[in-house]
Length: 120
Image (cartoon, rainbow, N blue to C red; front, side):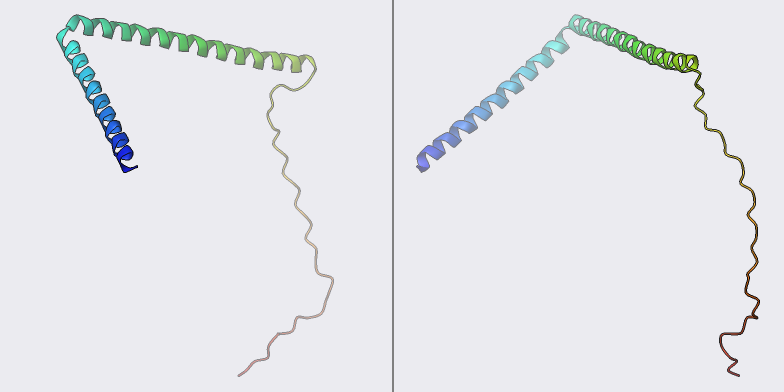
C-alpha cells in the first residue's frame, strides 16, 4: 500500500518537473528567437499596432451606432409626445411659497403659577 503511494508521488513529481523544465526551455528559446531577429520584432510590432488601430476604429464605430440609436429614440419619443399635446420638457415646476399660517392665541385666561415654591 505504501509502495503504491510512493510510486504515484514520485511519478507526479517527475511529471511536474518535466513540465516546468519543458516550459522553461520553450521560454528561453522564444526569448532567443525574439532577440535574434529584429525583423521579427518589427513585424510583430507592426501587426500589433494594426490590430490596435482596427480595434479602436471598430469600437468607435460601434459606440457611434449606439449613441445614434439612443439619440433617435429620444427624439422620436419627444416628437410623439409633442404630437399628442404633452409637455416634452420634463422640468418640474417649482411650487409657490405657502402662505403664513395664522397665530392662534390660547383660549385659557388663567394666570400661570410657579411649579415650585421658593426654598429660601
